[in-house]
Amino acid sequence: MKKIILSGMRPTGKLHLGHLVGALSNWVKFQDDYDCLFMVADWHALMTEYEHPDNLKANMFDNVVDWLSCGIDPDKATIFVQSQVPEHLELYFILSLITPLGLLERCPTYKEQLRQVANRDLSTYGFLGYPVLQAADILLYKANAVPVGEDQLPHLELTRQIVRKFNHLYKTTCFPEPKAMLAETTRLMGLDGRKMSKSYDNYIALSETPDVIRKKVQSMITDPQRIRLTDCGHPDKCNVFSYYVTFFPLMKKEVLERCAKAKIGCTECKKELASKLIDLLAPIQEKRHVLLKDKQRIQEILSFGARRARVKAGATMQEVKELLKI
Ligand code: TRP
Ligand code: SF4
Image 1 (cartoon, protein in one colour):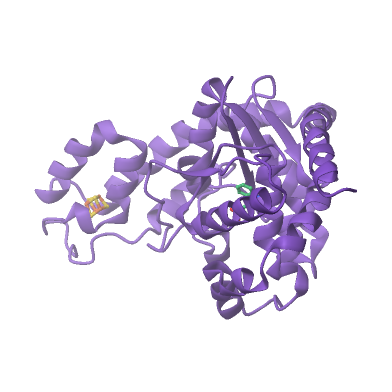
Image 2 (tube, rainbow, N blue to C red):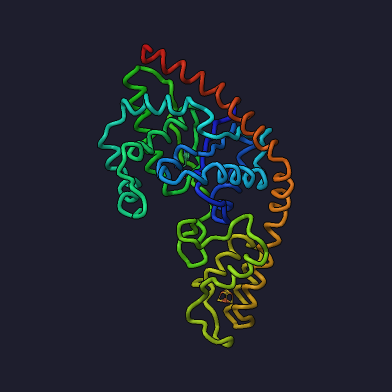
C-alpha cells in the first residue's frame, strides 16, 4: 500500500516561481510513489478574504490550470476543491470540539497574522480555527505525510496533538500522526530580496509574458557593491545568482566565475537569466494555453477529483461518527 500524501494551496492569487520550486515541482515527483491528494483550500482562503471573495473562484480555476500545466496528473493524483467535499467542514466541527482553545491562541502563525495583517479583520472565531480545518483536511484522508513550507510546521504539530487527543479519548487508532515533508529547495526570494509572495508584489507568475519577465528580472537587486562594470561581483550577495543556482544549477560555475572576475555586466547577466526563465516557462505556458481552450474539461477533472475524495472522506466520517455515538 502506498503512503498517503495530502497538500493544499489557498487560491488567493496567481501562482509564481516560488510555488514552482517550493511545492509544485515536488508534488509532481510524489505522484508516482505516493497516493496523492492535492487540494484547493478555498475555505482557508475565505477565512482571511471573507470581505472580498470576488476573485476566489477565478483564482481557484487559474491555480488548477497551473497545477496541470506543471505536470500534476489527474490520472495519478486526486485533484479537488475543498468546498466540493462537505466532509471537511463536518470533521472540522468535530475536531473543534476537542481542540483546546489555548493551543489555538498560542499558535505562532495565528499570533503573527493577527499582528501583521493590517488590512483585514482577523479577530474572528473562524480564523482562530484555521489550523483545525487544516487538521481536518489531513485527517479526513488519513494522510501519512504533508508536504509544506516551514511556515506551516506549527499547523502540522497542532494536527498531531489533535490526533493524539482524539485517539486517546475515543480509544482508537483511527488517525495516524501525519509527518511534515519539508521542501528540499530553500525558499525563493522575490525580486526585492524578500520572500517571494503575492502580498509583497515581488513575484514572477508562472503565466507571466516574456516582456514582463524581462522587465521584472531587470528590476532585481544585485550585488550592491558592484557599481561599475569593472568592479568584481560577489555572487553570494546577489539574488540574480541565487536564481541561477535554483533554476539552472549547471550554470552555477560559469556565472560565478564571470561575475567574480567582472567578465560580464549585471544587465547582460540578467538578460540571460530572463531568457532562460522564459524558456523554462515556455512548455508550461504552452500547456496552459491548450488547457484554457477547454474549460469544461477542468471542471470535469475537479468533479471527478471531488467524487474520488468523497469516497474516502465518507468512510472516515462514518468511522468518526460511530466513535462519537452519532
Ligand atoms: N494552510 C496552508 C497554506 O497556507 C494551506 C492548506 C490548507 C494546507 N489545508 C492544508 C496545506 C492541508 C497542507 C495540508 O499554505
Ligand atoms: Fe549578480 Fe550577475 Fe551582476 Fe554578478 S553579474 S552581481 S551574479 S547580476
